[in-house]
Amino acid sequence: MGNLFVVSAPSGAGKTSLCKEIVDFFPRLRHSVSYTTRPPRAGEVEGRDYHFVARDAFDRMAAAGRFAEWAEVHGNGYGTAIATLEEARSGGYDLLLEIDCQGAAQIKQNYRHGVFIFILPPSIDELRRRLEGRGTDSAEIIARRIENARGEILQAAWYDFLVVNDDFSRARDEFRAIILAENCRSARVLPTLPVEFGLAESL
Ligand code: GDP
Ligand code: ADP
Ligand code: 5GP
Image (cartoon, rainbow, N blue to C red; front, side, top):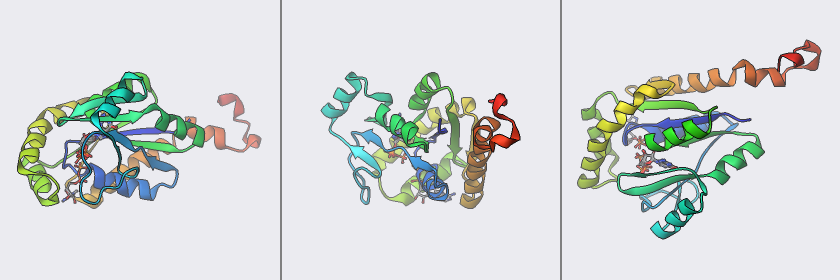
């Protein structure tokens, strides 16, 4: 079974930028494309960044039990389709889920092998500067995201790994190290070793 990496962060912490670098770096790792009712931002592409759906379509998917997890975040619906996880399993690749804390908690209950990573900004002031600098959201939306950030940060305590995104390249190295270490876990490597090593009984 492939690894399931679940990454959360308050909006503006750098989660999208870091996850993009990570997915580009590890050929066996793919980004899970979520469903959302949020309108696309400039530059976002349907099917690559999100599946952008109307509220009624989203609610129908939720009612039909087609989400592995879903949540309301900053006033929009976001969800991970069960089909996305099944495709990764049958395709034999690892998956990176960029989801909020409520969704991560649902995955933790239902998919015990998940690896949970939380990305923190160096401070709330810096978070505000980044959201303003990104230039994709109105002042009102930024204010709501900052307000939500305080509650989200408290959730960091239950994650397996914490990465503080102050210097971007250092944060990227730490993130890479987490993925590399998980890929070296004995349970993952043992099944790939030559039969002549005689380790088959250890599986
Ligand atoms: P960002 O915070 O700037 O990355 O803005 P987004 O609109 O891309 O994401 C908003 C929130 O929704 C973030 O907390 C994401 O982690 C979360 N999110 C994205 N996709 C999913 C999903 O499939 N499920 C859940 N539960 N949350 C998601
Ligand atoms: P998120 O997906 O968590 O909302 P983004 O990846 O969109 O965050 O990053 C928010 C903004 O902060 C972007 O404009 C990004 O270029 C910038 N940013 C990300 N990491 C850093 C960093 N380490 N130092 C300075 N700016 C950063
Ligand atoms: P944004 O609107 O800035 O793209 O994302 C806002 C928040 O929604 C982020 O914290 C992001 O991680 C979260 N999010 C994105 N997709 C999903 C998803 O499929 N499920 C959940 N629970 N949260 C998501």
